[in-house]
Each structure stands twice: as C-alpha cells, then as structure tokens.
Length: 304
Image 1: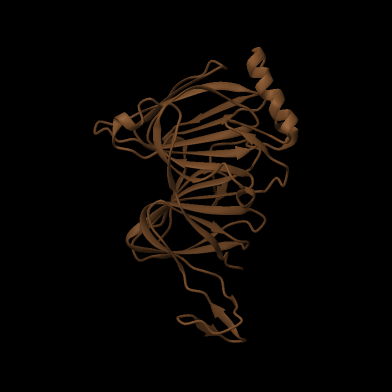
Image 2: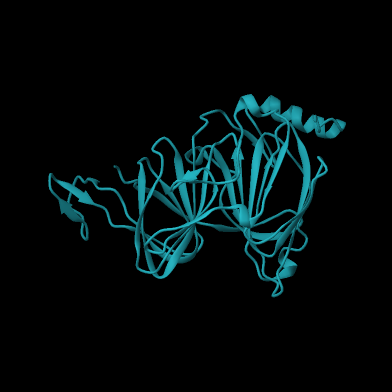
C-alpha cells in the first residue's frame, strides 16, 4: 500500500455567482488539469439571506455534469426538461447537461436563515458532450451511511466504498463522492484507487493529512529520518474551508483534531482531453464553444 502525499493545500476564496450569491470557490476557472475530470467546486455556505436569495436564475449548461449536495436549507430547481422540485438537507441533485439544458437553482434558508451546500462540476468526455440530458435526484434516506468501529462515519453519494455503493449511477466521470466524519483525535486510513485524481474539502473541524515518506536531498529541521536516507515530511495541517489535493497512491491518512474533522472526499478517473471553457459551457475546442453560443443566439441550444 502507498500513502498519497499532499500535493497542495488551497483555501477557498470568496466569490459571487448567479444573481449575486456570495459563496466560496475551492477551485475552478483556471488550469484544472490536476483535478481532471472535475472542473469546479463551490461551497455556498451563508447565514445572511440577502447574500443568497437572488439565487441562480435560468442559465444554460452544455458538456458537463453538475452535482449539488445540500446540508442546510433547501434549493428549489427547475429545468428545460420539465423537472421541478426542491432538494433538502442530505439530498443530492445530479444533472447531466449533455447537449444542452437550461435550468435554475434558487437557495432558501432554514428556520434560522442558514443555507449550506456544495456544487461540483464534472467534465464529460468528448464522446458524451452531446449526449441526451439527464437528471437524477436522490433523497437523504437513499444515501448509505457506514459507521466504522472507531466512530468514523462515511456517507456514500456515488461510487463504491467499504462494501457499499452510492445511489447515483451512470455518471461519465465514474466518481467516488464521500462525506466523511472522523471523531476527535482519531487517525483513519481511507482507500483511494491509485489511477484516480483525488481531493478532500474540509468544511468542519480541523486535522492533519499525513504525508508519504520520500527522499530529501538534505536534512530538514523538524523532519525525522527513516532508514535508508528517507525522510517523513511533516503532516499537512488543515481546517475549515481547506482543499487538499493529493498526489498518486492508493490510500490517504487523516488525523482529526480536538473538534473532529468533516470533509468531502472526491476522486475520479482523469479524461486527459482538451478543455475549451467559457462560463457554463465546457467543450473540447473553441469552435465547439462558438457553436454552443451561436445555438443560444439562434434559439437552437436545446437539442432534446
């Protein structure tokens, strides 16, 4: 077994989207090759209704899949396929935009005005960019939750983990999407398939992700040497709103702090394809991107 080293730690940055929704962006709209097949992760956590009620009115998507996971409040939604409804705490909405969809997402707070959720964008491979749009809505009770002997809890949104499989199926990126809670002071090893890109996004508590051992050219203060001239880099300390990007390996190790730690753990098989991206549309070439916006102007964007 090989432990995944921590490649980078990123603090999510305040930004504004939709009609004026204040949120935090962990990654997106840059060079996202290290996150392939994922494109963007937004943390829309807010307890000021004026900062989120304007929502995300009707807008188009093509060439991607969007995954919305709600922890507090609700998100009312509608789309050009005729889907209507609301997702509540613990629910997941998985939308395959494919050849084109127009939808809206309108967040509503809970009784105290609090709203919290995440939206992850997954890229579609070139062969499926123009596939028929599809919509999946999964209620909280349908998502399996596994509790280990040490109290570690894992909600499995998609993919297979600890012998259970999440309810979201047929997603091109074949992601494993987990909501992990590790109790205070506990150290946990979690498997991640070696061929996948993987990241963790911490949204509660604090802790450390242990680094893999590796050679160092010179001794470094505070770093312990292992047999054979190999050193163990110090663990990566993380807290609320920290994203941890991992390098290759087949497992990761986390140690929870005094308040415990809760994080999303997401992994997927890289597509390794060119990306042409503007706003809500992600294709493989600039010409395909121009075609998409011409379709919008002509009123021919919706193909199905």
